Length: 77
Image (tube, rainbow, N blue to C red; front, side, top):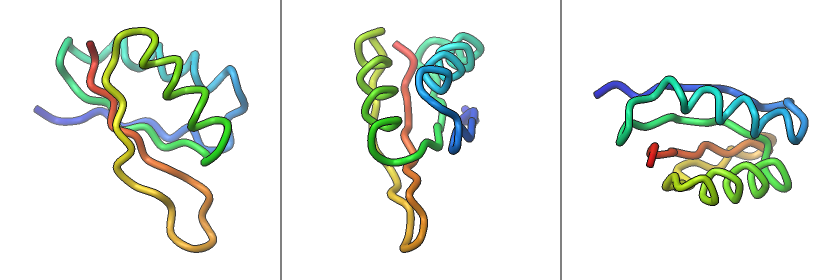
C-alpha cells in the first residue's frame, strides 16, 4: 500500500493539525500518512492531537543539520 505524504512545514498551529486530520480522512483505515512538520511545538501538538484521535504516531526522521523539521508516520486508527 502506498503511503500518502503531506508537507506542513511552515504551517502554524492549529492549522497544521486541522490539515493533518483532513488528509487522514482520505487515507483508508490502517493506511499510513507521512507528515512533515516543523520540530518543537508543531510536532508535539499535532502528534498529541492525532494520538488523542486514536491514530498511531511514530517519529521516523529528524531533520539534518540546518533543518528543523521532522517526519511522522501516522497509521490511521
